[in-house]
Amino acid sequence: MPEPVLLSAEGEVVRITVAPDHPGPYSTLVSFLRQHLPGVWIDWVAVREAYRFGRGRPFPVGRRRAEAAFDERAKIRFSEDGLAAFLLLYPPRPRGSRLTEADLARLVRAYGVPPELVDAHALRMAFLRHSYQESELIARGRPPLDGAPARVDWVRGLPTDPEGFLAALESLGDLYPTEILAEVAEHGKAGTLHPPESGTPGLAASGAPIPARAGEDTIRLGPGLRLDPAEGTIVATATGHLRLSGRGATTARVLPLLRVREAQDLEPWRGAVFPGSIVVEGDLEVRFPLKVLGDVEVRGGLVRSSLEVMGSLFVRDGVIHRGHEPVRVGGILSAAFMDRAWVAAHTVHVRRYSLQSRLLGFDAVLAPSKGANLCGGQIACRKRVVADVLGSPNSMDTEVAVGAPGFNATFHAMFQSWADALRSLPTEEGPEETIREEAARWEKATLALTVPHLPHALIATQRVHAGVTIRIASALREIGNAVGPVSFTYEKIGDRDRVAMTRG
Image (spheres, helix red, strand yellow):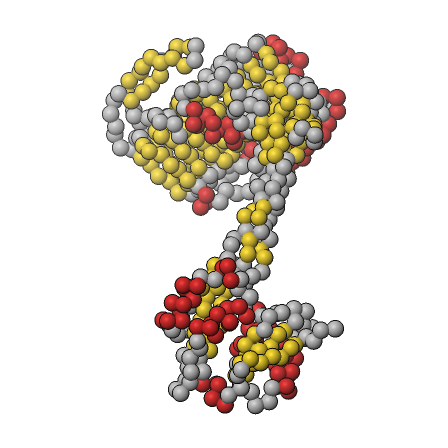
């Protein structure tokens, strides 16, 4: 069995080698040196450094001279992340001698700093400067390169998750895509899987390896998808809507996809939950209650419809709805305009304007495009409102509330009703696993509702017109400055003509 501590000497320099698996505490090392090195001046600071940093290496801790206590001392300090090493010099007492450049090089090696990491020029300059009690950077390690997480290149060009849709819509501006919801065919390729990478380990300035964090495999394939390990591809086992969800859009599944031209085609699901996604080829006007588990794409306008969408709702034209209940959306509601509409969604995205509408955004109400206007009505959300123009040129009353108390009541009722509706579905209505997960998600969202946190409340506008009242929690701000005239102009939205109010 090797000795836990070995003593050696070269000339007048005394070194100790502390075994990496030294069993005793630091006090046992002190007792050992006092017993075996009588009459030798010992630098107890160096002994502690040897115990902490010099395991397995000869470490200089003393000199066999009576006046050695007056000599210059030095030690190496490492940064908190271990990637940088610093030389720290202490001045000698009168009649004491200074360390040589070779002494410093040996000290650096004793601390275990690899030669390839040592900056020889910086070490020499530190020796020449002798800047006492000032840290001199002499070595820098290599940070680890963490592995990339698993990812999937899906077959469609547009993203298939709601957040990605929103970013794509904002970047496209007026170029609205011809098709949004992605459809995959049974036995067809849905995407290519790239497995996680392990990463490259780093090296600390002390010579210790720094392990890299391996990339996580967070990709989860739900119903309708399977992995072909031989090809590294994801294959659809059913025809339908490819839908991503979860943090980072890492959970994928295929929901049934229904394409309709008339509202009558949706009659079989009157008052029930359609367990998939829907594409409407034109306008949508349903006079009966309709709940949809997935996403809805309307390639026209949404008019006077009692619609609840648990996913996201994308409307090519606009929403015209003034009913007893709002259009409810669990994800993103994006429309070109809102005309006297009442909507409630996680995020309300207005691409052009809203007019005398009531917009409730669980997270935000966004109208960021150039010239996009929130004009008249009520806008309320928990965290932020972003608009290029807020209010109207003719002082039409516009009320904005951000982070106001009591805001959660609408969404509490909405989320709980969805959880109850999904739990009451018979199993043959859709994939049982998907229904069960969605019910649990809305139940969890109901329990997680909290009072908005005021520091998160934000209103960002480039212009604020007259007649705007802004409420942030209990604060109230009224904007009533007079502005220029108002005019009405002709414009074309999609295939429809429309007269819209604009600033003169």
